[in-house]
Length: 142
Ligand SMILES: O=C(CO)COP(=O)(O)O
Image 1 (cartoon, rainbow, N blue to C red):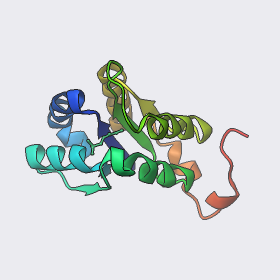
Image 2: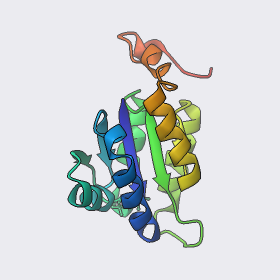
Image 3: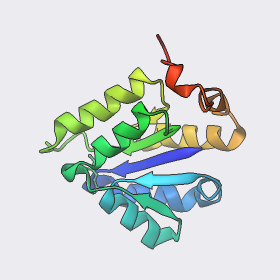
């Protein structure tokens, strides 16, 4: 499965703790991240992470593009609800695309743990249904 990891600045330490705790689960999957989050996670855990641009420079949009191409299966986005972001429209757009394409999305640590445990237990295996050659003809949810 392809898993996106994104954390706003005040949530990055939490993301590292999450990735450290769930490293055995994450190791079995393809990891993607916005620039700084990916750097912090890979430095702290040694996990291999494909890094996009930093969020404010378009990283959220790059991950959104993957979602729209049916190339992302799970998004963990530890967003900061108490800080204004210059790229708030990108944040909103990414969350919206998860809903458009019905991609499991965690925006806080509580949900993130549930989803990672679910991933480990095979609860997201239904995603394989969408990962077919006919994916371009599928418009999930509509
Ligand atoms: O701003 C972000 C998501 O909106 C995260 O970007 P970084 O991981 O580059 O800090």
